[in-house]
Length: 148
Image 1: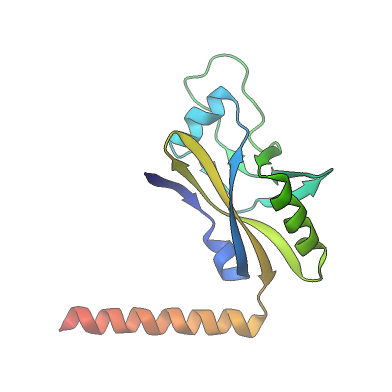
Image 2: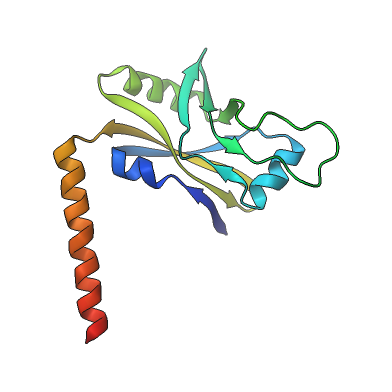
């Protein structure tokens, strides 16, 4: 069973997603409880490869309110768990011009918290305008169908 916790809608608008990967994330106890209750945001975050490991940087995890002891930094970098072959493939792709890695969504898969990351290419301004036009047309069609 998959339950979505948060999504990065900005990434779908800004980037053309070429390939998606499911990664685990290393969290501390109070962070897990906070994420399960929906206290995470990946909107302004990004993914970076450092020394052959993948990290989620600048993701905000709200401090858990019932935690009394050590509270970790809400915006610290967090390690993502992927297979070494996947990390090598992603690093080769990112070394190409114009490709980047972006977090797309955070979800629960069974008892595990997963982060979906995507190898992406930035959209040009005219691609973004086309996306907005397409969205407006779909919305208009939905309105017409509801009237009938």
